[in-house]
Image (tube, rainbow, N blue to C red; front, side, top):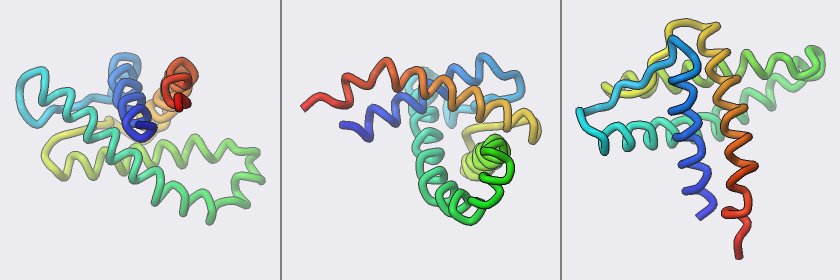
Length: 129
C-alpha cells in the first residue's frame, strides 16, 4: 500500500511539474487518457528505482561534498538523476523530456517540493493499520 501511494504521489508531482516548469514535458507512448496516466506512473517508477539505486550510491560517495557545500550539491545531484530518468525513458520511446541541465535542476527542485507537500497531505493514508 505504501509503495503504491508513493508511486502515485510521484506521478502526480511529475504531472504538476510539467505544468510549472517550461522545458519539462512528457510524451505518452500512445494517444488517449489511459496511456498518458500509465506513462506518468511508469516514469514515476523509473524515477523511484533510479533514486533508490543510483541516488543512494551517489549520496554515499559524495558525502564529503554534501558537508563541504552544506547540502547545496543535492540540487545538482537531483537534477542529474532527473536527467538520467529522462534519458532512460526516452530510450524506451516515450517519457520525460528535459530541455537542459538547469531546467532539470529546476524541475527536480519543483518535483521534490510538490512530492513533499503531497506526502504531508496523504501521510494519514500511508500510516493506516
